[in-house]
Amino acid sequence: MQLAASTGEVFAIPLDMEGSGIGQITGAYGVANLYLAIYNQFVSAASASVDVDASLESGVALARLSMDARIHSGDWKVIARREIPSSVWK
Image (tube, rainbow, N blue to C red):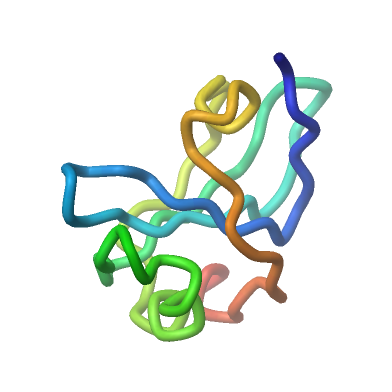
């Protein structure tokens, strides 16, 4: 199943049974490419949707263009929608 993804959506990246990374869609390029930001702060898998704002304030660890199908397939679950922090563009 393919899911639509849009700018501002925040997603959890499962790292192991206890923790997740937090990423955000920061833009789109063409039909299938997404600009992604992955943030510095890891969160407990159980509290990922609660800790979104703190993660977005932690700074960007990685920003890149991706054709990553993990968002579209639902492997990386969308957990929130937020404004893109200005730190992404610095």
